[in-house]
Length: 218
Image (cartoon, rainbow, N blue to C red; front, side):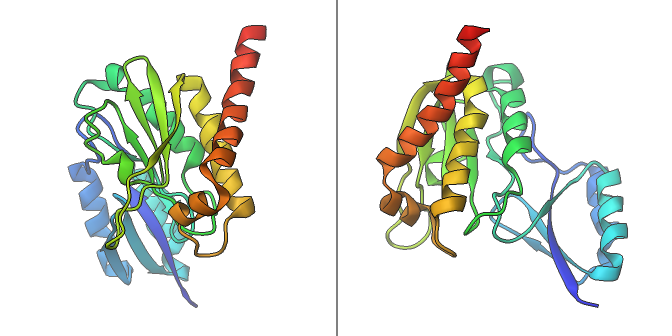
């Protein structure tokens, strides 16, 4: 039998990405049945286990309230801020809905998705591949951040003034564009440069606009 790697996260809330004592105990409890546990830069742990023990290990972690996601070339779970302005003002429910919609989607290279509940941007959203920043009663969408290397680059503003219900359709469309047009192992920043900001803006605007039209008709 082979080995399988998967990602583990406690999710996020007011205070940030926080493991409870019960969750840490669960991780400790599986330590003698896994190959290794790796800390990543995605606010996730990577757990490598033998395939015959994969299900039992994952079920124990889920029972402690931990989330299980695929590892590798997928959209990572949302890298969010600490919601220091409070759950309602910083949009915690919106962030959780977005995380549920986008985490674990297969893509040409791993995607880091960022969320900041205010313009302070403590989660460093402009260094993420795709990110959203809450600005009072609306949201701004950014793409193409790159934190690594000597040519690190801040993300570019793609759309501004989005409403909460427009975020998931816009993100979903951007991810679909990367799935369809991205090259294997191509960074998202390079994809943005090659595909062009204008085409991505048109795609995201179209998805967000569809939601706006439906809301007006309703």
